[in-house]
Image (cartoon, rainbow, N blue to C red; front, side, top):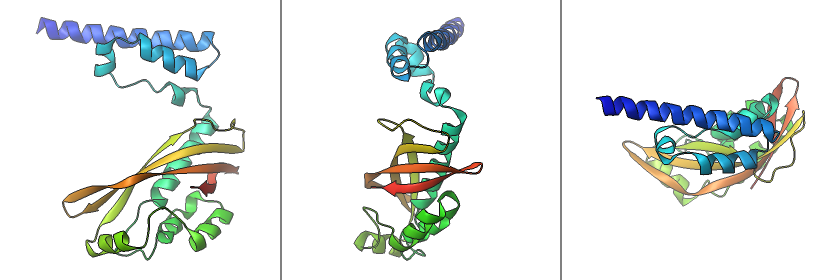
Length: 196
């Protein structure tokens, strides 16, 4: 029992130390996220890294507007890439459901001309027969993106899909990567372009 308490205390001290070091390093290097990521991953004790969830330094350093844009991208793409082949005619139906996260220009284009690497075809027909639904899990990144502005944000999204039919789940391969442009319209961020 004493050894368990000791391990917990050591882990708490390690995590607090890591967070303090990250904060001090970030303030002394004016938000250089690449340096922070590198230094925190090399200086963290292996027991703390295994026991504590990773510190998402990049998310904390993003301005509120950029976080709001990323959240809108994640929500909109999740809806746009979640398919119901038993009732959807094509993936365009999913873009219709995602209309709240799209600009009018993009919604009009995607409802007519949605093109993805997958969609109607043999796989779509199999999913429809199995009464499967295809669920999307979206992760947003910013590697190599142009600098954010108050009204324009570029991001790269990786979409992992899972087909669920009854009690079985199958990972849909390959993952889909899209580049998205988000624009601010009033107090909302909307997806203005999706490129494969």
